[in-house]
Amino acid sequence: KSRMRRIVFVAAKYLSFLFLGFCVFILFLFFYYTYNLPQPEKFTETPLIQSTKIYDRTGKVILYDIYGEEKREIVSFDKISDNIKYAVVASEDARFYQHSGIDFEAIIRAILIDLKLQSKNQGGSTITQQLIRTVYLTGQKTLARKVREAVLSIELEQKYSKDQILDWYLNAIPFGENTY
Image (cartoon, rainbow, N blue to C red):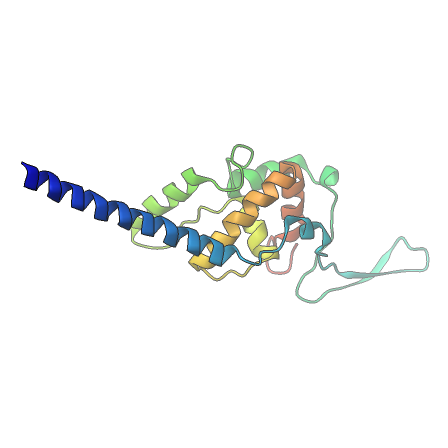
């Protein structure tokens, strides 16, 4: 009996050290990936590229609309149709107003569907995560980007209202080739 207790004690001790080491490793990865992240306040300073409009001498008729990669016109949130807002939230992130930047239910759902279909087609990103990815990060699918995206999303949601985030999203995300 005492030998069995000693074996269990030694095994528990090693498992505790392994668990502690794993936790330290996860913390190290977290700090490594989140080092040097942009602050959410800089989000308001990031200008969105708009097209150049050339008007006639009255200033009321647009003669030319010049744009490069992005044909964009910033529209204030109160002038955006509620139908557009509801449609985007319903299609991109139905639980947008319930989560705080990361939707764990959507992530688990996407993982389960991907495992079932044996593909990586499903996404679990929230509107906030998509906005962060578009403005600050790249579309590259890496663990580092996902961690950075999650941290920035949580910070953005703590500092700004859901409507402000949706406003930025609607004005920053493309709705087609060059249509912003």
